[in-house]
Length: 323
Image (cartoon, rainbow, N blue to C red; front, side, top):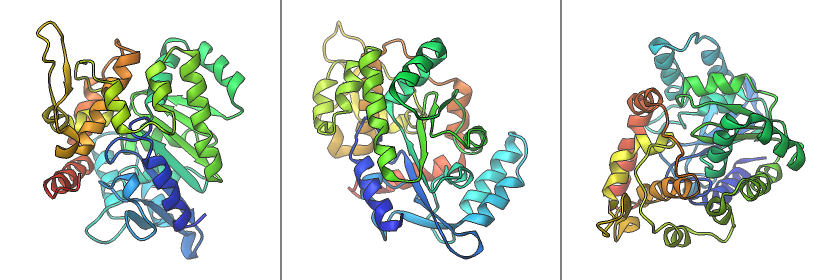
């Protein structure tokens, strides 16, 4: 596995909009051999997966120093969050910074780590919270993977701590967030799509199942998801970029309908925000009662300096016409 292969993986995964990624969400890394513990090549913060190339959108982070910095952090209070931010932001020199989730990419042991903002995984986590035995039985029938589940937690240090407890898992499904997959090769990562499709078929999620078709595009998703839906912060980016999302939707034109629809020209105005809205609409199309993330998770995530950085980079990119 090298940077060229990682860029190809980013392109493949980044094309799965909105089923697996929306906007600048999601991150991918590979551990490369080298002196002093090797290097973690990880997606740059604020960059879309589909724009990553071997020489753009990836940041090289010295692996051993980052792991040592993370090992010195204890607890989960404000001081720990600040120490984590400093460790990740300082891991690479220069104006750009690695993904805020570089911590768990460094802590998980396998060479390739992929974090997807998967809609089917969010639905799977919610189903697991209601019926853990039923989801466990499904997984036993459909995959030999070791799959773990983590309830909704704040991105960054709390998520890295939670994932470190499942270092031997092939996939960790994150409540209200998506999935993290670690592997020795890319083929196993893309095989996760089969698990998700089977899950959607077994648990009555026709919209999410359709969006997992490799031929699905944001345009086809928009046509499928034209019905009005409420705005609900179902995952961290819906909260972090909530203001931008609200600018690309309008109230349903039918006076008797409740909720919002994409505004005309939404994709031209702010592609990232439009994709985030499609993710909200898709989840609510199949699970109208899906709850929002806990307010504490939303508030803490929105206040993280790393998320402020992503908002600033996204605003600059949108203003420059490259959204």
